[in-house]
Amino acid sequence: MQRVNRSRSATWVAVLGTALWAMTFAAEAEPSSPHFQLEQLAEGVWAAIATPGEYAICNMGIIDLGADVVLFDAGQSPEAATDLAAAAQRLTGRAPTILVYSHGHNDHVRGATALAPDTVVIGTAGIRDDMIEDEKSAAEDAADIGTKLWLYRQYEAWDARAGPAGEARFWRAYMQAVAETGRKYKARLPTRFIEGGTMVLSGPRRKVVLDELSGHTKSDVVALLHEDHVVFAGDLPFVRHHPFLGDSPGSAKMLHALDALRAEAPARYVPGHGAVAGVEAIESMSEYVSTLRGLVAETKRRGLTEDWLAGRSPPPQYSSWWFGRFFPSNIKAIFDEAN
Image (cartoon, rainbow, N blue to C red; front, side, top):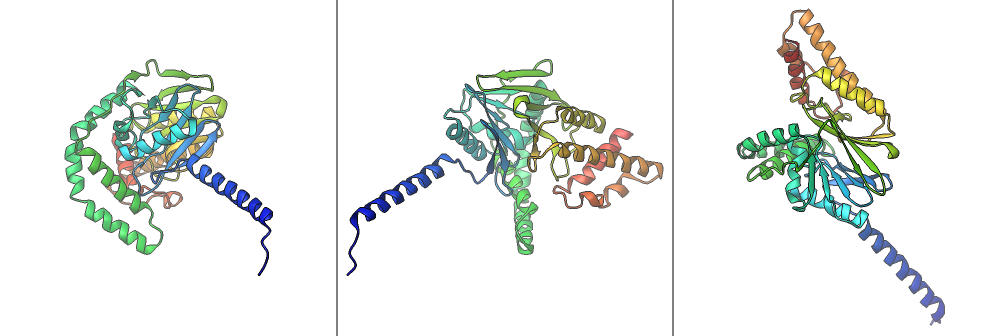
């Protein structure tokens, strides 16, 4: 029988125990959620990138001011917002105290109902108005979508058979979240308003400038972290996704807002949908809007109709982008403003 070296054995047990403790601590210290993946952009700054098929739907953010902790957007569902608040608590050691809305669309605001009652909610009068309008039809929309969920589940199953579940999984989750949140939805309206187009949030660690722009909707808010070279840009840019222009105050205003974002020239932009990217994301979005404006102008020049153009496939450079269902409605929106 082999003799055991007890001192060496004890040493290895101690080392193994320390390693297991470190692994356990790391696992506990790193917040996780099925609804999003965290991406650290600077010390005290994280993007929460929505996981397709889960309930965040939009990208969100965590910003540590050094005293207050700010959440940027709340996602579609209370489940996602609960996980975001828990992640902020674990990462910063403090519960979030401020929520900033980028705009009033349901996938960015409905999760806010899960946040602590004393959370300060920052928005604009335009965002408030959009949320009030959304609330009026939330229950009716939920009932309508609820009858169609079986079809979205079937689309997801078909998509999964063709390969890894992709965009169909996203739309099934979005429709399901809209149905679930809309049944008894009560809007969590802003309690503090951005006036004069700008608000500054300051703390010992950093300053955040909130600017009101107009492009994706009539009232969009972006968070500028100049010292960190980061912009939380909401839905003004979508990255490798067709944007939604159906609520835009006009494509010219959208281009103007994108020019304002480009002028910031940070290292990274956090879009409402898609991956964190550099200034090329802003340029790509500007090119998309300009391309559609050109297509509409040429179609009108040739005497062809809106339906003719909307029924065609997107230009080849956008054929692989998600949210292709927005292409026809974007064409219609630009046609309408040209009339």
